[in-house]
Length: 545
Image (cartoon, rainbow, N blue to C red; front, side, top):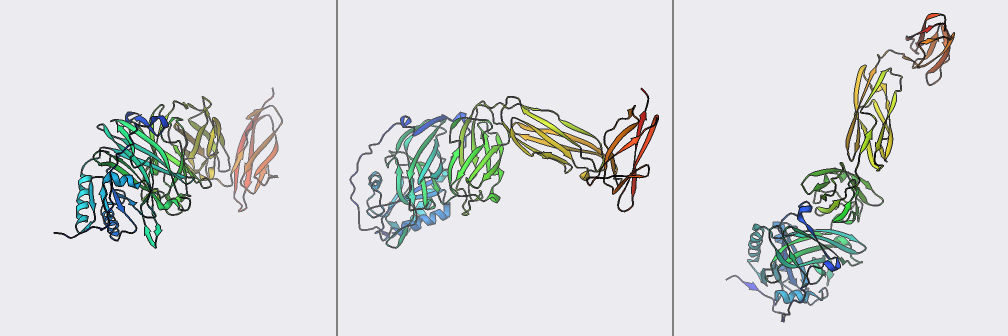
């Protein structure tokens, strides 16, 4: 027979009835209900095993219970096997813990209870094997209740947004949410996962979960001002009051990249279809760890909408923008990916687990964009030309839209590259230095939340003759006896009829040419500093009216 050591001090317990049997508290905005068919199914039915350890600082054998949990956590993982420790009859005991003691009939310490049903008081040589088997049995069965908690912290309060649903059948039970604190020092001993506060009480909030219904609970619990949030963790659980079975639970460590606030809030209605989502954090984020695939929207049909992000270091806020217009009057969830591979805070902390923001879109705005063209064709250009044009964009309903302009070629330059307005002119200039001789074809992408509009750009670059000459527009026929000729060159000097023409530093020149009746052949010569010359002919016909 294996040796069993039980502490000699027992606590005599008189059972009391559980008196809190409230209905779902719609009247005080604690619980809200939503049809599962109107939103994506984002809550996984992953099952977790919650350990409740009853102990005391004066208990000589209680450290064995902590060693047990450490070993189980190493085997099964911190997020699968979780624990909360109820200190009894000592300096860090909660006044309300006696309600939990009465409920379980705890008669001595340490008492370890797994998922409300597997219970052992005292230490035994085989309890690791016993509880390992119990955990494996629990995990082998699918969960009847899906549970997920979004945890945010601000103003020394931890805020809970808890989502529950039972996919297949009606489930009746009690919900409770707890905070616990680690690093508590008593008589030179450090104690972790110590129960500190509970919502609403150890009797729990009585709920009847109907199948295909999503339940959303919102509440908060205080944090001590003298203790940093990173020492806190939370545990939410849903328990059968009669059988004591914990259907499911979820643990969250605030030793994490903590979110302070979001816009929109969970289950917000009438969110605009082009809404920029804002996620504010307790600490700053390391920009190089942020990736666009860590944020995405999913609609109730399972379609994924990719996003892009920007970061405001002053406000510690990430703004996430969908890359396409969201569907009207549709249930969505914004997914912020957490876990060890997620983006980091300046304190090298990752977001502990995925964070979900369910919301429902409005029918507005209805974005309809007008583009002045889908192609730009330029005439022949030389290396010294600066051809330019523009594209006009308008949202026909007057809605402000975000516009990003990118060019697929170095020789196409667009200004500005980003616009936020209901109408805009996008100026396009070509740089012949980056073009090849002959036909050049490129594209401009105008990206908005309504999609991508592509503009094809074509231009034909003349040969690399150097130095180059380009004349400004001039008439081919005239009745005048003199005409003003202007142009530009990248040469050093310009000549007409053997006479040097004044050349500006920019390369521009201008001169007056005398015309005789009939065909006039005007030849301009340019010379560079190496002595190379090139000519540019122009023909003008003079006639009498």
